[in-house]
Length: 366
Ligand SMILES: Nc1ncnc2c1ncn2[C@@H]1O[C@H](COP(=O)(O)OP(=O)(O)OP(=O)(O)O)[C@@H](O)[C@H]1O
Ligand code: SF4
Ligand SMILES: [Mg+2]
Image (cartoon, rainbow, N blue to C red; front, side, top):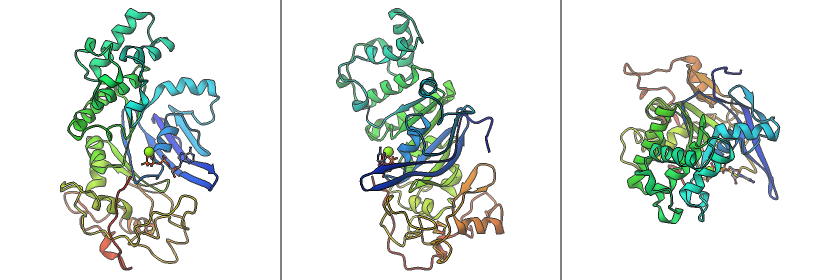
C-alpha cells in the first residue's frame, strides 16, 4: 500500500543479476518506507544486498521486480531524463572517499562542478561562497584553508567530509551512506557520525545508512532511527533501533547481536545464547527452500521452515519481522510477552527453545 507521507518507498522490490555462474538474487522482495528526515540503517553480513538496495534507493540501479516510489513518484519506471532529476534528490556517499574523489581536482573543483553544472549557483564568486558554507556545514574549518587542497593532502576523515559536502551540493532530500565511516580511523568515526546526524537535524535530510557494524548502526539510528536487518537479500526484521537492540525478534538478529565483539552491555545482551546450526552462508545462486535462514536457524521447524517461504508480518506500527515461528508467537500474544519496562527478556521466542545441536556462534564477516 502506498504511503503518501513517505519520502522513499520500496514495494516488494527485487534485483537479480545474471552472471556466468547463474542468476544472483541480490535483493529479494524488499518492502519498507522511509519518512522525510528519517534515519534507516541497513545491516547484515557481506553480500546480503545492502549496497544494491542503497543503489536502487539512489536511482543508480533499477529493480528487476517491484516498485520504488520517491516522494510518491515511481522511480523505477521513469525515463532516464526524468530519473536524472530525481538522482539529484537522492545522493550516495561511498565507503572509500579516496576512490570516489578525483585525485587531480581540488576541493573547490570537486564541489563547484555539480553546483555550476546543475545551475545551483552562477559564476565563480557565488560558487566559492556556497562551497565555503558547505565546508562549514561538514565542519571543515576554516573553509578557505580547504578550497585549494587535493585529496592526497587531506586525512581520511577530511576526505569523507568533502564527499559528504559534494553530496550536499544538490540539496538532496535523501543521502545513502554506504559504509561511509568504515574506512576512517576509529578515533574520528564518532565525530563523523555525529556530523552526519547534525545534517539530519539541521537540514532535515533522510539517511539510508549502510553498515555491517551493529555498534555503528546503534549509534547512528539511536535517536529515533530504525534498523533493518538483511539476510540473503531480504529484510528479516525492521524496527526502531533501541527496540531491536533491546528486544530482537528474529533469530538472525539475535545471532548478529550475539556476535558483536564490543563490550557493550546493550549489544551483547544475547551473547552466548545464540548457537547457529551452521556457520556456512548459503550461495545466492542456490538459495535454500522455504525460509533461506533455515539451514542455520536454531528455531528451525522441519516441514514448515524448509517448505514455506515466510512473509513479512507487522508487529505494531513500526516493527516487522519475517519468520514463521515469531509470527505464530505474535499471533498468540500480539504485543509479545514483555516485562513492565518494555523489555522482552522473557519473550516466548527465545533461543533456548532450539532443538537441534548447535554448532557455533556466527561471525559478522566482511
Ligand atoms: N553488478 C553486479 N553483477 C553481479 N552480481 C552483483 C552485482 N552487484 C552485486 N552483485 C552481487 O549481489 C550480491 C549482493 O551484493 P551487495 O554489494 O549488494 O552486498 P552488500 O551487502 O553490500 O555486501 P558488502 O557488505 O560486502 O558490501 C552479492 O552476491 C554480489 O556479488
Ligand atoms: S522461519 Fe523458521 S528458519 Fe526462518 S527464521 Fe523463522 S524459525 Fe528460523
Ligand atoms: Mg556493500
